[in-house]
Image (tube, rainbow, N blue to C red; front, side):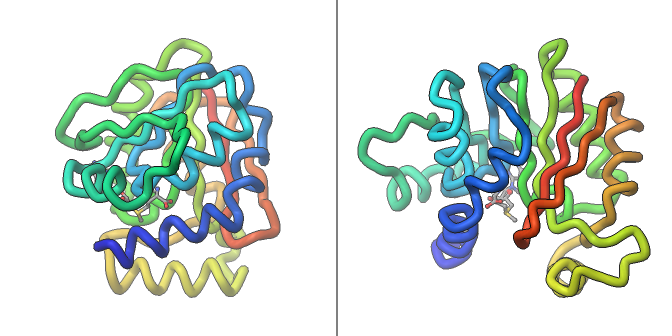
Length: 192
Ligand SMILES: C[S@@+](CC[C@H](N)C(=O)[O-])C[C@H]1O[C@@H](n2cnc3c(N)ncnc32)[C@H](O)[C@@H]1O
């Protein structure tokens, strides 16, 4: 579990800044990174948007390990134990789902997005961070390899932007904007 958390952590130490600045998120005051693991992406958010509060919600054993092994001096982020499927989601005006939806079947993704939509403050939004396939699914090769990994190890897979847009619209979000960063992961912002 710690090795997995270390792997998750290192991605955002390298590429997190590109993700959190893919859109100007400064209008969002309260941000919650759902399934935020070690807090690495949350830390990048906090650095880029110092006037926003950033909370990481994850399963209890992950939060306990994050507190023990991944906290930093002068950490500005808050860790919160929870379960985004079976528990309450704290109110916020921006929810981040980084490498979460690719783990689950589309029905479960829509169920989670609907729950987020219900908790989200008016004018708030959701930021999806995933490796986006091309619409014809013939690349990029990294996204295809990630998708193969997801198909073997999880219920999910990687998708092209149109698939995320339709899940977001179905859950009630609009103004879907897509940013391909040119790095391994991309960002999609949608508004309630
Ligand atoms: C693939 S990892 C992504 C971690 C992080 N968002 C990132 O991009 O580095 C999935 C994360 O979702 C968390 N998770 C899975 N099911 C969850 C649930 N029901 N409630 C909260 N967190 C959950 C896992 O513990 C794990 O930290």
